[in-house]
Image 1 (cartoon, rainbow, N blue to C red):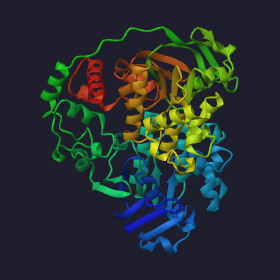
Image 2: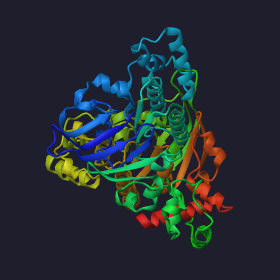
Image 3: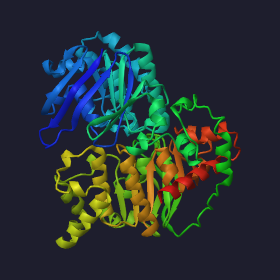
Length: 565
């Protein structure tokens, strides 16, 4: 099932300029290809052209030609396209059709009129592959982001299509589930010989398994079409704002030169012996920072317990303290209770047991509005926060609710939009933005209110490396210069590693650890318990024979902090 774009361009009717420009690309039957690029580069638009959403559901002007298996898609309808291309979307909520997980997975089989007994067997086996077999009776809308992603994955895996398209399949997944997802996709690819196309920001995670080619896009054009080794040996990733694997960053920090002949795409193929002396010298010369002194307590969580159904505890006797001026993360697997802590702090849920204190005051005595005056919370899904049509009005809403004079509102909103990289979009409607851009709008809406504590729930989901680095550098500046305390709830190991000082690890409703980030990231058993994985920094240090892996990780953290300061 060959895919071929020939001088292909596409322009949305709502926009003046084309989003895809003169695309020439051939993907052979059975290939596994990854498409990377910053937000707005046209990756997802290219995917929508493949699965028929463009032009059948999303209108615009097409020039050039796209053919699948020799058939011009201009002469096909949406049904014919979806019979050839199965898609797992980034925004999983928009993909569910069943009232239960089982129904949702079975939907494609019902359309194909598969006999019921056979259908049950297929659904059960598919659910087992993505670790959902015990949850088939639950509603997909009651699941965590990562669990929803697995339901979408299962829904496509049962469908007998020749091309599988994954649009940011790792965006909401914890590291271990993400790793398992890449393994499932790889297994599916090897067993079925289907053509697999993965659109993803997290290149290192996708390269956990072999891929044939990486397509790099920028501003609607293909700027590279290479093997992973060729791309990782080139300067193109950093030039176009794509995060390179951590082990490569460490090699470059030590001044090592990396070439295509070194096979840098996978640590298993990389010849480390040639780099070992240089890496060890860099590590031994590096000075690690001392732990900062703790400030005054700002947020205290004391013996907190909560259950959604009065049976299985989501949080069980959890206690921790966030001090003023700290930059802390809460790490854990999907469904571990991380986001429940956010809802309890907000006041939309009430704890079964325990207390939450802010500046020494019990939050149980405060209304949701009173809490929001000092605590800013940015939720994981931006669509759950947005309530206005225009970007400016959305960011201005909190200030207007406080009765701030309109000239001051305008000044503050324009300043914060510039800081969040949204200045040029200030007159745009929110519907015209990508998922990652909407995320930045919600962050701007909270930051403009100058909270004392800022809680970010999965801030990097749907964000490309360039934009989230700029945003996180800005948030770090708020922390260091204005003293705003930051709490990040995430399973993005890279984010936690590079920006936070301390991590609180929660798994299966219990608090497992509360330590410095470098200490946590050097404990494989602890990470595994929380459905996290060791980073390639850990693997690199182990391969080098370094005993104090936590010090090696701290050395890298300090190097990155100095580089981006």
